[in-house]
Each structure stands twice: as C-alpha cells, then as structure tokens.
Image 1 (cartoon, rainbow, N blue to C red):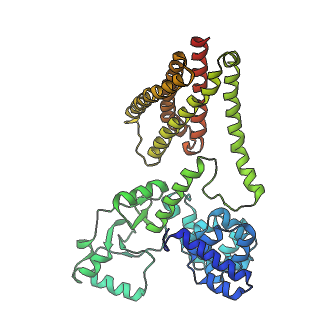
Image 2: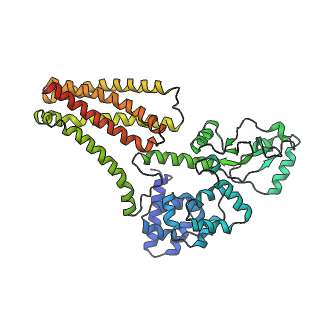
Image 3: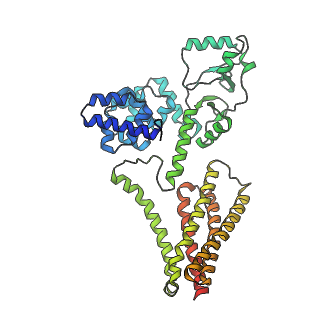
Length: 452
C-alpha cells in the first residue's frame, strides 16, 4: 500500500489518535481529529469498537457533527445519536443540504424529528416536507430542491447579472435549469455555455435541450444508470406534468452506487449494507442467528437425502469419500450463474426478450463444464480406487449436477424477482440447497443402481 492508500491512512490516523489519548493529551487529540475532513472522521469512527468510538465522538467539534453523521452508516449513526443532547442534534441539522437532511431525519426518533422540524423556519420546513413526501429510494427522495432557474426569453447578460446578485451557487452546480413561467422544464443552460457565449445571446438559442428530466418516481438504481449512461453531473427532477421539483447531483448518485455495491455483497450473507463491524455482541448475534437457522434447515435436508442411502454408503466406502465433491462443484457453479444473473437484473440487462437465450446459454455452459470436470474427477476417482464404475458414476453425477446448477442459477433469481423477493438475499441459499440435494441424490442414486 502507498502512503495515499485510504486504509493505510486510516490506520495511521488511528494510531496517532490512540497514542495521544493514551498519553492523556486530550486537547492534542481533539485538534488532530478536527483537522480531518468529515469523511475521514467517519472512517475512524467506523473502525473503532463501541466504547472507543463514543470517546472519539465526544472530541468532534459541534459544527462538524452534522457532516460526520451524514458520512457514517445508518447503524453507526444510530449508536452516535442515541446519547446526544437534543439541542446538539438540532444544531447538527442546521447546515445540512435538504436532500441530506431528508435522509438524516428519517433515521431519528419521532420525538427528535418533531423537534428538528419545529426548529426550522416555515419555508425550509415546507421544502423538507416536499422531499420527504417521496420514497427514500426514488429520484424524488434523492433530489435537492435548491435550484437556480432561468427563463428562455432573457439574454445571457441578464442571467450573469442575476447570478452576481445571488453571490453564490448551490453545491455541484454545472447547469442552470431553463423553465417556463409555469415552472415546466424545457432545458439546461450549462455554465460553460453561459461564460463563453455572447452576452446578448438569448437563453433559448444556446440552451441544451438534449438532457431529459428524471421523473420523481424513478427508482434510485435507474437514476444511477441514467447518470452513468449520459455522463451527467446533475439532472433535473420533474413531476408527471413536467413541473420542476429539484435536481439530483453526482454526489447523491455515488452514494447510491456505493450502497448498491454494499447491498450486493452483504445480502449474500443475510446481512444489511449498514451492518456495523464493531457493534456489540448481542445485536450482532441476533441478526446472524436467523441466517444460520435457515442454513441449518437446508443442511438437515441434505442430510436427510444422504440418510436414505445408508446401505450404499456402508457397502461402497468410496462413495462416502467422494460424495461431497459433486455437491460442492454444483454449489460453486450455481453461485457463479446466480451472481451473473442477479447483477444483470440489477443493471436492467435481463428482460423477457433475452431470458430464453440466457437460459439456453447457461445450460450449454453447464453441460460443457460438466463434461470437462466429469473427465477430470472421474479419472482421479479411477486412479484412486482402481474401479472404472466409480469414475463413471461420479462423472455422470457431475455432468447432471452442473447442468442443474446452471439451470437453477439462472432461473431462481428470475423467479424470486417475479414474486417480489430480492434474489441477492435469498438466491444463494436456494441455489446451494438445490445443488446440494440434487448432487447428493443423483450421485448416491447412480451409485446404488450401478455399484451394488
């Protein structure tokens, strides 16, 4: 790792702060901590056990607490705000952007949320309530309503004078939004166009009409794809009448992409993307117990299949030695297909038009890999036990299970999505169960038929 590596930097910062705290130089530790940016402070907090985290949190300056709370995960944020005085929580929200504030207040207890809303002026409260009226995972929930709009019939000189009077622009402003007098979206005026075009040009003659506004009910993963496909830094959000509601900026989209990535990884283990690595033992154990219980049930199902072939296992010891190979290979093959199809569903690449082709392709891949590894495993089994029939049986079982693995890996996420279950969460358990049971049943069944 280089000195600019984030992990190395976090470890270095943690060591320096720990040394300062152990030496009892609290003021020095406080100064070191608050010289960091909010994201770095958040990284440090998420890298500490519960007790040390609270100690470090007490050293964060009040004016930085709001920004830090936005950077940490939901579970860590909950532990931090639980013991914060109400007045400090209200103060932490004062300088938040509305889109960030909307996300933040939804993680607060109802009593605190009411206090935060009461502390706002009526205009800011109405604007916040407008954002909160949309689902959190929609374009409306992501948007910030701090926008600058201009009319198409004015000159660029007028626009420049207007901006000079404003004095500052909202964060991440790369375009001004062109609307009608009825506040209907019609295009964008890039700042680059504004400063490089003739001042007497009219907005309508130089504005960009190619960027389509995003409907407020668009899901957040679709918003991320729109930004990616069109290389956008910001985009307007409209209602069903094309009236401008706000805008989404790239920093919000980056958060969506990161959360989607975390969700894909964590959900495969039955965990949430906000899981706190340093959470106390009891809540961590409680959350994981359910997933372990589900896997225990699937393990008993596989064991039940094996129990029906006790006589085969007693007579052919080689079968007991080899039977886990078939199930294991099937599980890996099924998980590979499941991962690809789940990713394709998340990216919108899988549709009714290409499902049949996809299923056929995965079946052929499963058959091809089945034949290759059947020859390898069958050959090893023959050399090991000096019996050709054992090699043939395990080879045939390998082919059948890898084909079934490919079929289940492709079909199960489609079925789960159809019935409203997230395939990233339930898919791996279902696929592994199928491949384990089918693999064991086929191998032991063939062994019973041909080896006894």
